Image (cartoon, rainbow, N blue to C red):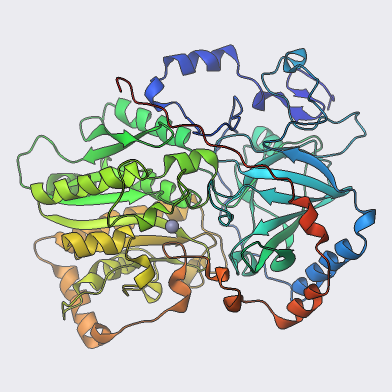
Length: 605
Ligand SMILES: [Zn+2]
């Protein structure tokens, strides 16, 4: 391949750094209400990577090597002991000006923005990192050896502790070389990366030449506590993995889960509205503006032509921006509900669905994992949401209340991803009803979906989650069927998909079976409901109060590691690391904060 062509310069894909005339025209035609705003003074590149939906068939998890923790710690200690032999060269920072390209005019290369690093010759194999695109969140990359890099993620705005989601790209690869990446400022005490999960990757060459979309890759994967002390006590964690790329001068994207951006949602909604078969089944309405000034929409789906009395259902998702699978499940649900099947028609004739597909748009745009731009977890604000600080929650709550006034509101569900458990399951609320009616809907889901795990469901009312949608709306509005749907970032540990990663097919399966379970739950004969009620009776599930320590996943507070006593670290690891100095710590110093811009005012205000 030529080093510099129309498409590439210095091994870097040009298309990330400039917009074609055609793209500029398309943007001009788009409704300006829906253009992405960051709400920060953060540069967003003219282009986001193109997403290819096609993905690999079922991809197996890896089997963790017994000695992997030991090996990873040995490497960590070597890095500390031989610190002065490391390159320690900052090759990317998403906010700081680049010493490599600061005097270069992007126009020289026909670009709008320049990468942080530009290789000096064809022989310069330094990787060129990038994350200044929508949902990207790499803060800094430090080359420590020829083919090894330490990576630092950007925490959620106004927080110091929300790092788990990652999404970035790298260019100028060399084929068949073993690269190693260490993401050194992870926060959670444990991770599914120790239970067989692999990171997701996307190769531009693979996409172009073989039409391959996102795939799982990487080996020697390990997640462990490192020796970098956190200000408020405790230590950071490292995710380390090695990978070989298939092409020279390729551009690779690496992510925690299949990315799903706000732009992707806007395109999808536009398509939905303009579909002649669907546009009479769905209405798109504006809910409110986010803090950054992005428009948050909701959908109403139903048969608007028949006057039959309808029950109400509200479904929301993506309150946690890093849980991207929630958006895929939501999209598949919308597809199903607006589709041509007999079941979809029954649903539209009998229900009105109100759907808020993306509750935390600003978080999604900025690559946050959990919080919004005010630095709060929106899924703790449902008791008394603030109109200015949590506008989408405030207005969604109004929407739920209004639906309840208008009709029989029978079901509320908020869709999430789960970063510590495997499988797909639900959290509900156990009330005083001796018949445990809240168990019925999850059990119907179990019957309709081979990946749904009823044993992982939990119906406790945990104190620290009183502000979540599930508990707050259940208490205030007495919605018996008030749930969160949780999907593992990894995969299943039972049934036909055991040892395989979840993929878009699985997200589609759960979305469809969720919709079919609504029919089972409310059909007049109640045939399947009676069956599961009997099962509840027989198995004395009625009195079951499962206290599942693991369920503190993503709906709950993930950060039990705030309390250093709770840190789950092998003792051997503690002893080895305590004696070392904090060499790695120096790499995180001088990270300047990225300030927020004042919120955009609405027109006419
Ligand atoms: Zn969540």
